[in-house]
Length: 114
Image (cartoon, rainbow, N blue to C red; front, side, top):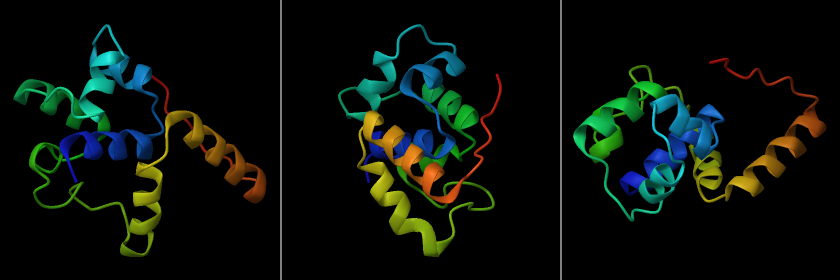
């Protein structure tokens, strides 16, 4: 898994759009996140640390794929295949999947406030 794929996975698991993640990181343009996720641009150490803090993941995992995603590894083994499928979804398809799951299971998914 590339650094771009890890950024997209962590962002998707948090439920952030690229624009929202960019804003939370204090960056002006969503295109920065898009470039990282498509591996068109590699983030420097400072950006990785910012992304890791905002996304709640470990910087070594985000930058190199080393170790676990989080300190307590929030993704259970039984759910990793599902998360890999989520990784491949485009933003608009991710929103559709979330709406479908919410409708099917009457889920009340809390959103984090800024």
